Length: 185
Image (cartoon, rainbow, N blue to C red; front, side):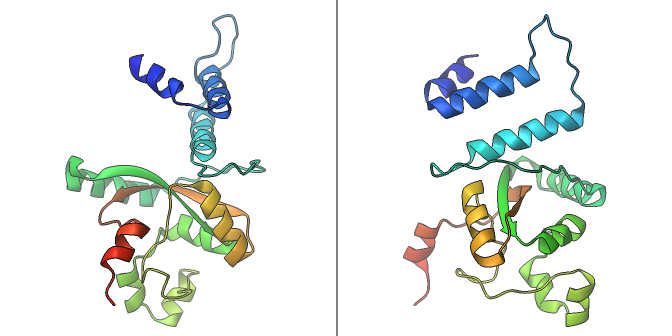
């Protein structure tokens, strides 16, 4: 309870309202009769993560929310997570792209750059994937902690308004600031 009090003390008004709504959804008043399915609770959790991730003050509205769990990829993820142990931290990150790219990601997962290099054009087509460019920081999978930046990227570069929230195990990651200081000339 102390941790919750500390978190609430550091929230602005918008975040307090979101916390209140989330708590009411998870713990409805005892005089009400509401049952939530696992799926509904998961949707609430995703929505809460989305609104709490904003880095700016932009206003967004969720028009549609889909919770997609590819059981094959989820099993691979959990197996790999067990293999790595607790030294890798689970994080939730956003990726903005076109609808067809996001569907391919939901079906096949993110394709690592080293795997992409080995794929032929027909392999890429069968995975409904393509290499867009070498990336600002080099080859990699670009994801971020802010939903608003993923939306900005999707709108500006993909003419899309869709993003995906993914659970990842963070390995080697770099902040833009550390990359700029250490980049090769």
